[in-house]
Image (cartoon, rainbow, N blue to C red; front, side):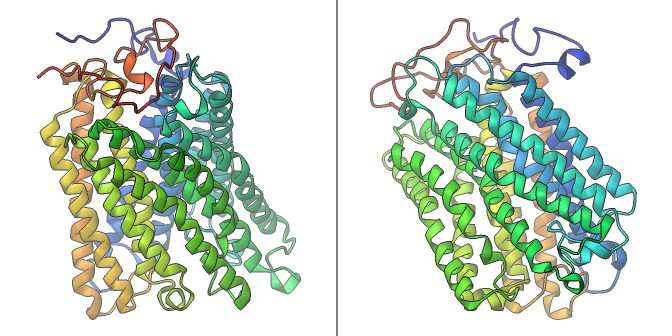
Length: 538
């Protein structure tokens, strides 16, 4: 009979102070999980407020028109900067990466704890902004509007600035950890693909994040001192802000999605019980995505007045950046071929990711085409594409990883039937919500509008009902996962029969991760060489 070890990282020390001063990467990952989950539901509440307002075409059904821009701005800022960017690296990266590498902890444990405190400090600035006038600029803070309005722009942009440092610290920590703390025998090409994705993400965090820091500082200086960087009346250029912002924010898209891709590489092999197809191609494609993501920021600015030649170059590079992502998708599908596939919840979320992210990627190619982009720019088609990539990619992959590693984190299994029901609710609700928005965009409905004509009423109604179903599915997910922490049956050390090193230690792991330092004798997916039995009791 499987039991949960009495002495593990959860029980090694007790009391709130032990958690707030911990240097254990696993506890820091859980601190991030609690914090990010809170902001996820806050941001989700704002999303439901938006959809409730847009259920009917009349003015001010639920939200005052003066407040509508604030609501979608807060939804965007919270979900992007406080949830999606840090979710996988800070939560699952923190908990899983050292275990996968066979390390006792990350390279800089104190820096790791400091990154969480910086995240919370930045989040407090964001909350302060909500209660001191709010922000209605959209999550992009475009000048010149953001430099002139009487809102809490300074405190909100300072929140982004501080959280950026948290991201840099996390990325730097992971890069050094991967270089220096791999277990004996773990060469670069015996390293799990999740670690490769975290490595590529760390590079983006360290290289790209300073750009958004500089950008928001310039915005603050513009507001406080009127130095004229983005003011055309003083010789400045408001479009320059867009260049700065998107030079960071397009790589940030891959800070959000690359770790999710790493999760999918892990769940597909474990659930198919099969060696991954094209290991090196997937590993190198992570680095390829990181590099090419710096070359395509201008496709966000096709209607900004940039030169036709620049637009053509950015359009071409947009098609080019799709290649490494396509390599991953085709290799994942090839991995499934003739695999012994277990249709457990992590696999269902993995299938959901493959469908939703593929839709997001293909519609991105539509928007990368100049003539189509000009037509669809600032319509709900862009909103739907963005959510298929960000939520259909990052959040769905996060849910796949959360269900995959939940037994390792807590040593207990969740209710599989409820998990499958919730997954179905999330998948159906998501598609009803955003397929409706694709159609709204094709019909010409602009985004960021609180009112609309009756011709858009039916599709907006479908979108809103889909959002409520999606929200209910996510709420059910939170309920059964929390229940599993206290009442779930013991999971055993390796419920999925996976081969990576985190499954060779107890569940939950001990304080130092392993009873004795492990050695990597084989690759992380060599199912053709190693036979591993699942330890989950029937």
